[in-house]
Length: 126
Image (cartoon, rainbow, N blue to C red; front, side, top):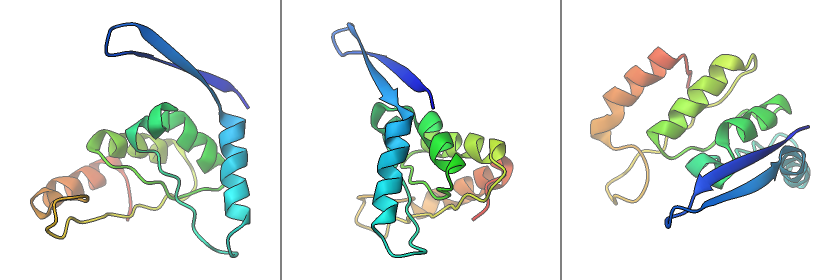
C-alpha cells in the first residue's frame, strides 16, 4: 500500500508536508473495528480533508477494505464522497445530520432541497 505526501502552505507562506502511511491508517481502523461487537458500523471521519491526510485517498483505502460509511462536514467533503461513490462498486452509506436549532452542527433545513438535488445529481443514495 502506498504512502502519499500531502503538502500545504503555512500561514506565513512556508511549505509543510506530511507523509501519510495509508497502510497504517487501515491497520488502525481495522484494529478499532476488531474491538467492537460483530456487525457494528465503523464510520471513519474524513472531514477537513481527513484532518490533512487526504480524504479521497484515505476514504478509497478504507472503502476498499470494506468500510462503507464515512463522516464529512462540508459540501466539499460531500463532493469528495460523491467522487468516491462513483468510483467504488460497493455500497456507501450516507447519514445526514440535521441542525435542530442549536446552530452547532448539521444541515440547515433551508439547505435540505439543495442537498437533495446535489445528492441525486451526484449519484449518492441514502
